[in-house]
Image 1 (cartoon, rainbow, N blue to C red):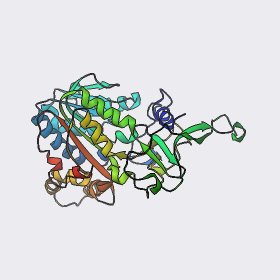
Image 2 (image 1 turned 30 degrees about the vertical axis):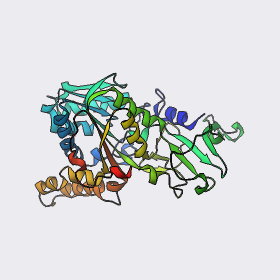
Image 3 (image 1 turned 60 degrees about the vertical axis):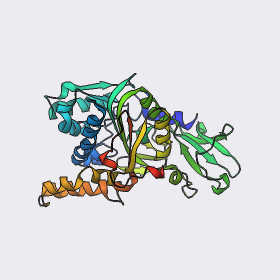
Image 4 (image 1 turned 180 degrees about the horizontal axis):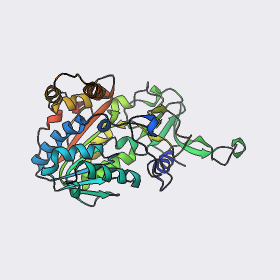
Length: 362
């Protein structure tokens, strides 16, 4: 089985996949049974700052709807609704997980009882949309295609059943299996094949790029902002990155083995933002900008938000500032995470990319 299909089933198989099996995947501590935490759970300032960019995009494009893909616990929806509620006619959440959708509804009902009537849930892509799209840590969960280099040829890496004799119980054991890649299939880079050491494994991102292209095609007017960890193509496919970026998360610990505990842990890969930018452009979007998360949040008014809170003195204030440090520090999420913005319709100078725009690096 191609790894892309294996990853799709491991994450999204109805009732069995990681996101569809009822697990509590998001939370702040392993003691609560969660596996990882995202920026909106760390501090509400994340959503409040992002809301400034979304508000500008709504006004510039003359739209009144927000579409959030992969809303997790509903923390970001809560924050955006709190800042934008009066400007919105509808807030649509597209999420495949029924368990998470229940959590989102309960959270929003408690936080914004007067606004929850504006929230709509969907489990598939819309046929047409207008408004501002938001996707925080969505692209990294899209299934990827694996390629391996044996020193002479690129091979397609897939998954096979291991020898049944090695299994001690009824749980299937999986192993890696390679086969020749279709002619011409290789990483999308100008790096020569000879630059890669034998044993190199890397990813291509057909599903994420198709997802972005579909949204661009179906949008009549609006903007989109995707926040995720990743690199431009020139950094993604460096020969030094010969182990690829595939990673799993379970109980707030990371490991590189997607073939164990299948369905019980998250599987992710870093995003090739060059591929995402090209997919959006070719389908009708224009790139508004591309920068680091730290720079984006600073551009959206982080300094003002911190100044308004005064000097940290209480335990809660110190905790909030520590969370912000994680979001913007270069050695934490501030540099690894990137933000890319798109627009269809009137061009505008997006505040999030006012300083430090790296579009030229894509």
